[in-house]
Image (tube, rainbow, N blue to C red; front, side, top):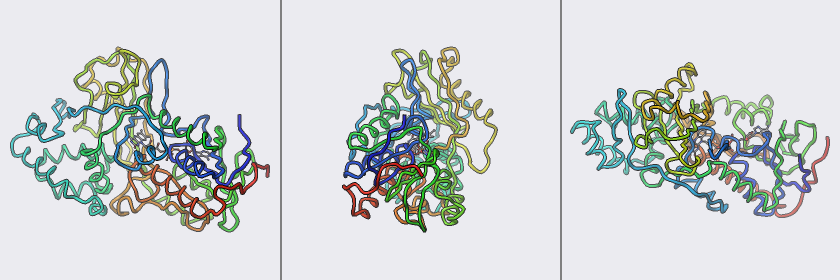
Length: 444
Ligand SMILES: Cc1cc2nc3c(=O)[nH]c(=O)nc-3n(C[C@H](O)[C@H](O)[C@H](O)COP(=O)(O)OP(=O)(O)OC[C@H]3O[C@@H](n4cnc5c(N)ncnc54)[C@H](O)[C@@H]3O)c2cc1C
């Protein structure tokens, strides 16, 4: 059932992590916020399916701590239980699983390399701390690695790692800033696997928003942002009604935002959105009644652009004795291959690391072309700074939020940083903040 809103100053379109975070920031300041979400529940790509004690995220999800996501969750008081993946992980090369050299000791122990390769890898990690992510913004990951890593085997290892970290196999396009930033951060800050899946975060944000008075309307599709010569008046819903508002935050994926803002009359936004390159993945998620092998729980594939993790080995995601494995293949958005082949490749990785998994399968979820990130930061656009800004050219009091917006962070970090920024701009520019301005939802 839809709720009627008593008082709306700001409408947020989209109830994913970005929309929910923006609603929390505004509601906390006493702004009347209505959030509309077209799905039957909030969460967007962060939603989790739960059944019989299993929790399956929509593809592999982990929080890379030490960035905007951690900061925003802490500021909003959203806490969660988590586990961290082990230091000892593995790589698959030519079908054989080897210990992954994640630290200097691992580099000395691994069967992956000979002595000269080890020296090259140690040198790489030693100079990484001197690299400034921003300085690598205009260089592709591939070029950056080619310049720094001499030994082919070491380069192959780092290319595999890079694909996993930048969520794409298009290393010749993606800005090295993403790789350097994420690699450096992952060496200093732990990765969190969230207990109960990312739904825990969604529920936490929803609770904060509603406790502070935000009105969340689910099953409510926005059709368009209403404006007069660029000055925002509210949001028109699919049922024809209008929610009047003095500001609107659009927290959807890029093409949905374009549709809402009427790209035909706003060529500037159309040009921005048409130029974005989404990061797509093929994800295979499996729930098992038991884990076939407790040894190979985290595997980086070097034979194909793939990675897998038994997240349930480190966080509460399965019932007693059960297991949840997430595997994903990084795709090249310029030329997507056969999704059936991608699925077979992912199954092959599970066969190598967890033989017998098919016999204990409870449920599987295959997401062949899921958009993991709305815009890959490319070298051609200068990395993070090349993404669209929070404000929409040609509009007043219309703001964007999402993982394709703003100059900070990647994936959830970008969503949360842009949501915070959008809320900040609304608060800064609305002298009416804290007071009721617009009326209730009206038919129009
Ligand atoms: C497979 C996969 C793996 C990922 N792994 C990680 C990870 O490990 N770490 C990490 O940090 N990030 C990861 N991400 C990214 C992370 O999930 C996203 O950055 C984040 O969830 C995006 O939130 P959002 O609110 O910006 O967008 P979304 O979640 O896409 O939310 C947009 C919402 O808008 C709604 N909407 C759209 N149009 C309308 C309309 N007209 N009216 C009303 N509502 C509308 C949609 O229904 C949706 O709920 C991953 C993503 C995927 C898909």
